[in-house]
Image (cartoon, rainbow, N blue to C red; front, side):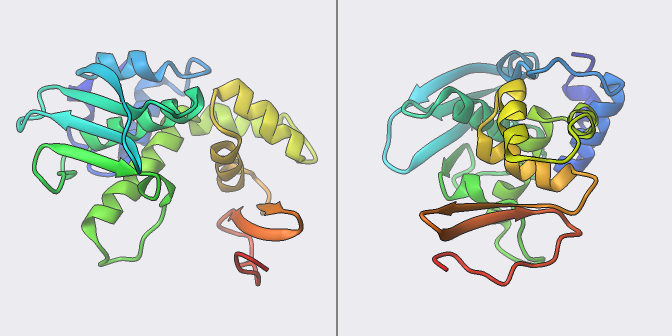
Length: 214
């Protein structure tokens, strides 16, 4: 790890954070990224589990943001916990992220699913979207992830499984990142029993004319 909090102090968006981290790392990352070790090096003093209805993750910190404690859902899988730790670390590193009560973020499963918002929308929802984008970017860094995609020609679903194992992330998170970073315009569709659930598509892929439940 070739950076510290002082190196990231002027970064106000997840994209700026990730760009600076990539620059300081010279594009070289340990795979899978040891997110808990990195969080500790960035002044997260503890990562603790908590069992509560609707709870996925949380962050407690001092008003001066000198240090923080990350909370994760006790019942979540290991890979889900890794994403939650990265999400809460994003809240901690982004200076304008402030929880509703002033000290503690409490993030639900719904919060962990939002990645894009409309300009002028709820600032707290935008914080959750930014934390999610940071989590995806830090766990699946763009430079090595794109290289891994390019090494796998004729993209297939099996590649999502391979890369999810390689980066120690969920298949769903990996599918979203594949759609985002693939050189080709692709979409990954999630369905069950022939019924459309959701889709992840690249910026150049046309909008799908189907809705959840079709």
